[in-house]
Image (cartoon, rainbow, N blue to C red; front, side, top):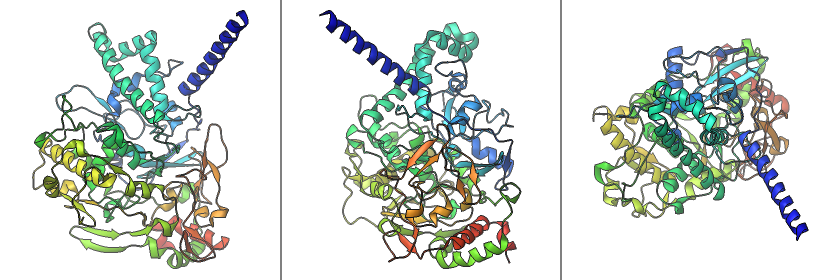
Length: 602
């Protein structure tokens, strides 16, 4: 009996040690140790005022009820270091200029895209993660940084699923929130910073509000974990955007039966010239700028309720109140229309070999222009680029994103929508359906189109948007267009040198590898660094401390397709084999395509 007791005790101790190790690594995620750049070089893409407008204009996201001032004073689990300190947030890949100072628009001196907002009738200021957080990039070379406004972020923002591998902002934030709430000394320091002289009067209410926000974070983390919703780890610079928006909007907010496995992470696409595209999103599924931006805000955390306090679906004009800020979204959209593609900075990244680039220009016309130089037409006040859509089985790239968006179905009958009312809304389905909509089997694109239409109508009323203003805020008077092609778009390539990694899922680390056959591409490589390779035009891929190992053999990560190699065209082969010297010439031309240096080529 004594041996059995000792054996059980040993097992309990070992389990305790294992649990302690797990909790330690969950609370201390494995993060890189970036070396701060000596100087950040801003390209001539925007004026400084336009840049700051884009960086810190809120869009209405609320990050699960987290207040801005809470975030500013939150501590790390095992120290009194501030979670929001620039040096710590930089380890997640968020962008900090070493020379930046607090400003009225950024009083917390936080990274790009960390804004704040107040809802009407509330004194609370919420942390508001804006589109700039995910659509601003940076390249480092020889201790210098080049900021790519409208480029692809390389942070680890989305996931709160706890893993020993760690590295996620969400995971680390939940660990800090949890330790603050359950450690009385931490919470007292936190509360005194937040409340100041109101500590005695408001401490109890603060603790309740803080616990409510923490519970939301933990509920989402548990839900995502035990349901296995995101099996393909996103890592730096990626998120399964449609999958996460669908799970939040249709699963969290309507019914657990609507949760779908999201195994198709995609890169954050670059935003310059996007306002000229006929269709946007990687699969060309969306048309109206405002509806697209409302959907993005909902996915990042803007509030939305479909039901009243008694669990009954909202009806009539009560549909659907949200924290989305449509006038601010329009301000961001107008600012993006002024954004220019990044021009290759010779003073930082090296002088362009112009004779070689001229050879690349001829190769581009032969091998690339057919897909990447779209037809243009003038429609009203803008020139429209009609992008080529390449079926997934033709371009051959990982099909998960296109398949999931086209094929996943969701049951929205609980909302009790009237089909006759839906027909009168500003939603245009392509092609026009021949059968009535089945609200128990709606795709993510159709479902989000109608949700955003309702949200948009309500937000316009509350913002006092007039009938005369509506076409401008919508974006060129466009309807909420929806397509569901199992295809990916081929976008124009101005500034493409600054948009690594490549393909929609970020599975190819450099442009040189993208121009190479698949068997010459890296099967695994490391992500999470800003260090740039100006020869191959991509981020450096060698191992570094706490780097993220990207494995292209995992579903959603495949690096197939877009191949130039010998063989029959189709099924991923899009052109003839390019010799190494031809690839180098093409890369040299892609440095200058669409920029001022292109006019200097012989």
